[in-house]
Length: 286
Ligand code: AMP
Image (cartoon, rainbow, N blue to C red):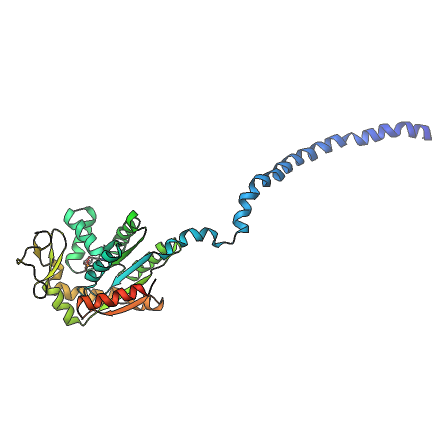
């Protein structure tokens, strides 16, 4: 081939060689389009995406940390030890809801609700109501509006699964139990207290046949309702409840001790003396 021919055919060859070029460009252009979209995305995404990265992780935790200072108090102790009386007094002074699981169940029993029907047999025989029923009841109750500033739990938790579930519910909000007030007294003191205890069927007010009798026997001083012995306060039921307490609730003493939350009170003394000690313990939490 002459150089001329070569020169003449060169552009054609080049053109032929270049022909595929536009085809090649198209995919590049096609590839560029999505890249541009990607590049454009951060313009919108970055400000929101970066904020949580730039702000240390505690940022979202700061919000729930405020209610962390609310008081979540647990009152624990064998049945009849007097923890309910102390819890009610403290709840009234602190203006916090007093959540007694025993009272909640008794209310369900009275209204003959499905939950009351399920719990009745366990309660009347001195047994604990199964964990899943109690936990559901308490989780619903502490989610109520009046618990936003804190609350006092009386008679819950009573088993390790209940304590775990409470800890879990609080942890979701970055919280934990503030303190566990543990009341104990010699068994003979407890049996004497329970066997003399009278409870109003209408309003739940508690009196004692010997130490704090109602003005008229069998009539509630507060509402005039019928004041009588609870079926589970009968002596053989009390013994059963104490046995159940030792095996099911006893393990919560080391559970809360290990977490540094347990404050012990000798509940054999006078109600007012115990209450003074309790108030000091609450003040020490602030
Ligand atoms: P209380 O008035 O606290 O002694 O409770 C009365 C009864 O209610 C108990 O004997 C149980 O049958 C039932 N109960 C109350 N709280 C709980 C709980 N946390 N777990 C299981 N059963 C409970």
